[in-house]
Length: 90
Image (tube, rainbow, N blue to C red):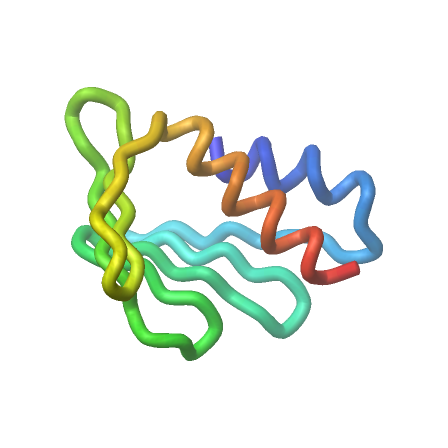
């Protein structure tokens, strides 16, 4: 899903996204910025890691700083991440 949304949002950007997948992490790269996901957290271009979890029910649980964790649909999370990364690259 992340690759598909990155390609779609890349149509309106001067940059393109690269999605790298390994056994223990997924990295989305746009220009000199990156967004890395592991089993327990996500990290954006050198910022502190934030809680992140893929759930069996098709949702993603996200936590930020002192805010309570929220769950959203996996496909909506992928679209949001790709949109934000490519919008920042304009």
